[in-house]
Length: 528
Image (cartoon, rainbow, N blue to C red):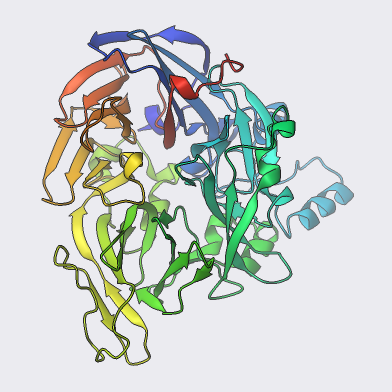
């Protein structure tokens, strides 16, 4: 589908009024702000992978029953360098860029040396993060870019490394009830100790620093976890939290640091330095928020690859962890642009189906329990945790459902017992074709689908008079694979999954990745 994946998208920095069909509730006021790749060709050069494309931030603004659309490329250093050179000159994870062949020998040699410990891109194309009153475009490197949520203007570049020793960081932070940001990253060059670092960014700063808004200057490292292997840290895209614990799954999808350091010289991309070790274990870390330490019991499950945690919570002396996992790492390979051709819908089949799995970890179990005993005592799950001879605990999950990705929940239930998952369905193809609501209690589903429609991650917006978990709306931007059908923003009743409205925009909408809904009360008037 070259129309959707290969072609550069045009930006629309000035607001475009959408045509609204149906009725929007009067309380829906704010901005749906989303992020994803929009440009894959610069001059005569093309990125290898869809996830490498230059970040195109777009928004749907809801104001008094009307919807306005706008989009703007993130003016990152990466974007500016590429556009100025009219070629790809900054490397992305799936595309290694090389110096201009016209450079002299000294300049080339210097360029090679500088790639031994690579400086990663600031092409922040994955998600949007809120920090205090500010909003940042984020990716998985140590750079984030502040943006104006109203105008989509790119503001300052921030390097996590100035505040915490990490080279990589997730694009899926968590927020506590006070608005503090909790995130984690990997440190691969700090005194030779490869570790995972968990840190907190406060939601407010001392009064005297209010004008500077220096939230990151008050960043606090909560704890660090040493990698199982110093030279092969685990890749991870997200993590989980409960009231008392931070959950990190150290999967055997690993980054080879030596290969990373020599990738540039060897003429290969950084993605080739990732490999899945199916014979290894996936270690389940529970970090106690009070002691800031990993619990002493070693807990593991079988090898798997996961990108998205759904939710986690504590119940009767157990920690319940819901994730979307794959049996291997083939999903990443499917998004190389050479595989995303015009016959995608007919010819591209998922070889690795995502599964929503529930792991249950017992906390205060009987230390004298016999080997082989199932330590899970929750009657509501079939998940098991078996005690082994060496004292380790081997967890086997309960299957909640198959074929879903990009999961979202009512975030007020994050870290708490919950019932509903909102996700896209990817049963046969890497590209979603349906939006689904999964009841984890009954395993029943509600589905929205329409021919030639490819929905984005569904975002739950709670009703102001919410009484039940699913009182609210689902927002999803819909890309169409039929050029005769205009793209639109879909608004569903989250409880019934019936269509409330759609806002059609006459633009070439891009398939995005993640984003946030910002209620009007959280929008700073200064930005406007």
